[in-house]
Amino acid sequence: MADLRIVDPCAPRPYDTVQSLRGLGGTEATVLRIANALSGQLDVVIEQATRSSSLRLEGVRFRPMDLAVPLGRVIVVINAWKVALRLRRTNPDARICLWLHVHPGRHNRQMGQRLREADIAVICVSRSHAGTLSRFLPVRPRTGFIHNPVADDLHPDDTPRDRDRLVFASSPHKGLPQVARIFYEARRVLPGLKLVLANPGYLRWPMPLLPTGTLVRGSLTHDEVIAEFRRALCLFYPQSGFAETFGLVIAEANAVGCPALLHGDIGANREIASTPDQCVDAGDLDAILARLTEWRAAPPRIGVRPEFRLSAVASVWLDLVRSGDGALPGADAVPEGHFPAREGAGS
Image (cartoon, rainbow, N blue to C red; front, top):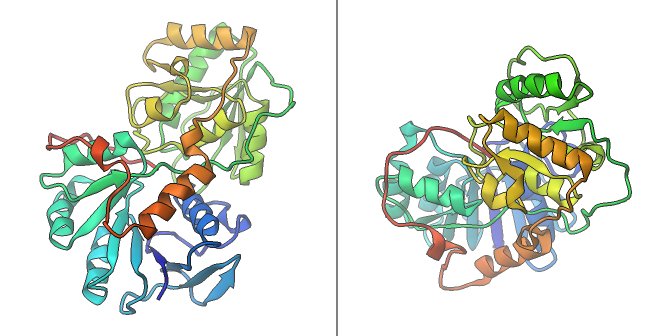
């Protein structure tokens, strides 16, 4: 019987090493980091719907998803609430949690009632994510949150920064058309600016018309993305249409000393950015230009919030698995009640 069974019905292909994460998103990277961090103290199993064979790697067991098998004292299901319900039938005595990395769409409004009836808790990835879910669901299940982790060894180094180099390191559906328009306007005032596009490639999405000065890097490895953050003036993400549930690129950019230029009033941006000056109004070009000009003259000193470090996040997970009372981290910070929901999705 595993201490922790993580069930991933959603990943488009199997993953088990850092190299295998290329072309996947922050959700898969987070699952693997947490499993590896806990494997020295817990028996951890990861099941994946797309996996066809079993293996053991760095203390973690990987196996094909089999919902009929009763396995795991604590079972954590990635994003798929109906799979969590099916697992409840074969694991009546297990503690089951839905580890939610997205904002569910309107067709999922019944999930709150169904999860509550099945005694399945929800773990969100930020306080703002948990609050949005609480407002979205007519009936709220037990809900808490655990932040996504940033590696302990990500720190600034002596890489020279190019004051004209901006980086967009997300899938194009996360507001790239708006970012490209703002970059076009900013470049009219600061003609030396360049915008590097690093698309993780996990979702097919049409690219918008890109202005002069855009450099398309395509799908990069994690190390290559971090290298871009080290060289750049900032992570350039002033978009107001896509709500991040956490925003791992923001935290990782901050971890290596790279500020993030963000729209403040959406998703988890204010919660994740380590300093308030990284948040602006994406509709205010003057404010964006002022921040770019300020940072070009004197790059700010930026770090990551310590509670996002992998060691801190893994400790929260360890307490969750070992606790006998079923308490959820962050549950006391999630607002009660429900209100009309905003559309969107994030990771």
